[in-house]
Amino acid sequence: MREVEPREAPSEPFPWASATIVAVCVLLHALKFYTLEHWPPKDGAGFVAITLRFGALYGPSVHDGEWWRMITYAFAHGSRLHLLMNMLAVWGLGIPLERRIGTLKYLQLSLVVCLGSAALVLLVPGRGGPTPTVGLSGVILGWAGAFLFLLGRAQVRQLGRLLLLNALISLIPGISWQGHLGGFLFGLPCGLILRRDPASFSARAPVLAAVAGAIAIFAVYR
Image (cartoon, rainbow, N blue to C red; front, side, top):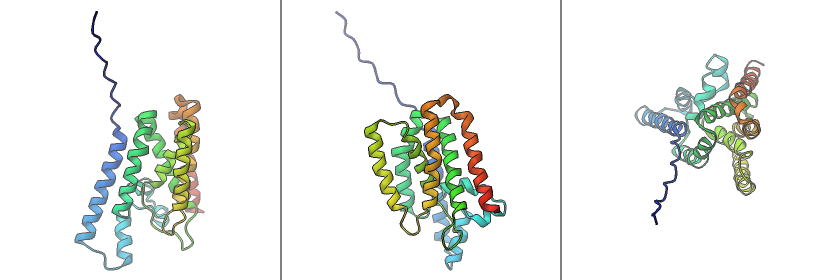
């Protein structure tokens, strides 16, 4: 008789995209914190100016040609608690999604929902007018929207409860419900494509990104 050595379980691929997102968010927040510590703003306008300097989404700035803010806002965060909560969401939701669909599709999905989140923020400003918006939450909600089509029933119910909790949080003053909803709505068609025809996702993702861009253009120049 021969002894059969147990085979080692194949190691999961390293989530390079998620790790990069976390690294950029943490680095950017550290630089912002350093700036606030060494050059503290004298008033609220000064704080807003620093927030804008670190990539916040702001309609008037986008109107002036700073379209890159539709991406950079996702890497900026308002507080250390805000940063911590979103980085935990990357760990619990982003990494499993990246490993499930692959890094390339994950990056494409993240870009689509990032633009979709920004587009709705620009389209539906708050009652007081446009305000600087920061945070990865819209992207995270986009991941959740896509994940709804990729999970089993029990997991969908669990994720649904988390989405309901997030919907309630979105009603708190100062939270961008527009960003949350925009990311989630653009995540849904991404998840549907990834479930029904994943091979075509790379070709269809630019179309969804273009739709988000068109909404943003309309919102900024209407």
